[in-house]
Image (cartoon, rainbow, N blue to C red; front, side, top):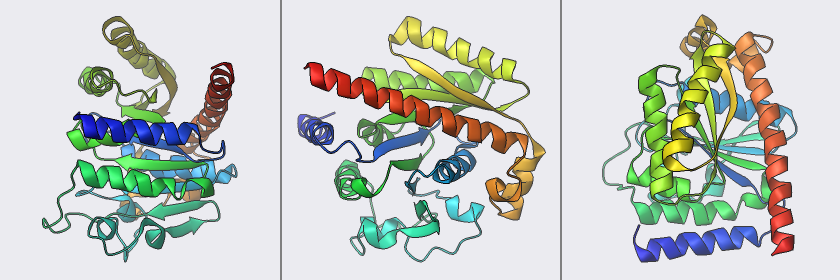
Length: 282
């Protein structure tokens, strides 16, 4: 990263540390490749947090391949690209989905006259800070892979949730994402979800393999948030463009995502308490 961009990130993080404790935490949901179920998880995870009285802003942050609107059969009138084109503010794009869940949608393949660069990413996060006091969490459904723009996004995040599959190739992709974080000295709290598992044991084994490599080679900490079962009900909900949390709230998949939401809230509370303790001691 160049020195000017690094300084912007340092100033941003300093401002966040000095801000009120109720300022929103930024959560980047990422994956090493496409097809991991990242967007399906992002939407249902955000819904489950909102059910628990957390005020959530979910943003489709995949600039050219946005799809959250497709999951909900939604026609988008104010996509995120309007912000990049300086047509609208972020606040003007917010759509209320439920009482505690707001969404900023994207659009797929918007015109190539808009180049998403590091400056635009940084400007996005400085504008998100203006919304931070209105939310508990700002969740970013990110583009797959480890592009420079995704790395810049992660620089501003408080939490990474890395979605992986139990297959060795997907575990390696997740490792590469964490390696990018370590190499560029990005310091969000890293957590992992193993999706499309045949059993909890398979999920734990996959995470343990990833964690062993991360601990040995990267010397960074990563935590398991949970695993999600492989189920045809997910495919059916995507095809019908209906939110599974609404249509099948008692299903195994949604029960698992619900448990992940509970675990994430508790984990976030612990992290906040530790941060306040360190701040008081320094």
